[in-house]
Length: 200
Image 1 (cartoon, rainbow, N blue to C red):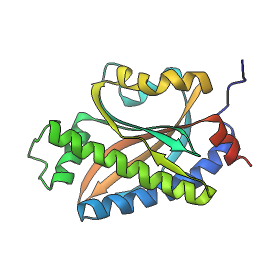
Image 2 (image 1 turned 90 degrees about the vertical axis):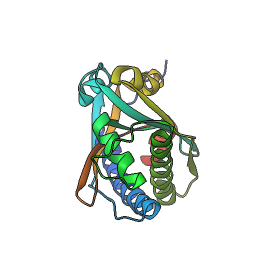
Image 3 (image 1 turned 135 degrees about the horizontal axis):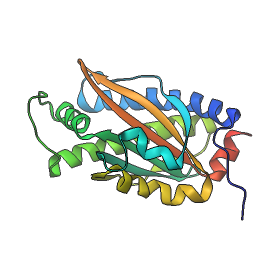
Image 4 (image 1 turned 90 degrees about the horizontal axis):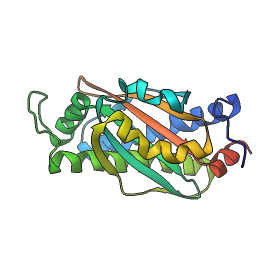
């Protein structure tokens, strides 16, 4: 069996921090253009988190959350997920649909479609920035929006992640627009080839 990767390696985290900052800046510009309002995203903090404790970062395995899952395809492959609490998901939907926060659209078909577009756009702009830095190709898969307990949602990523590493890379950033703040976790797990490329 191949040796598992150590994502707490400082060289890996330093390289990913630089790329994450470029990716987040690019994603914020894309989202701002999408809704016609300025959206800012704080500088991401890259940390290595043991797989066994990932669910605790969102309130425990039974916490109700919304996940937007996207796979990276092309020369760069891996898994990405935007994950947020139900209240933050509602604020994000209202922002996208031009509603005030008192309006509860709910995560119906329209709300889910709006969130899927955020996942697709964020992943696209994020990957574009990283691919440009590495001079390679990368594209997102169609996004999947899931509303469930955190433990069930995280299984989407962790089943495959466990074969690669005992840890997952967590990029945490804050979305803000016109006084609205939404804490959204952006989780990234690149595959072995991607990580080896980063260290070249």
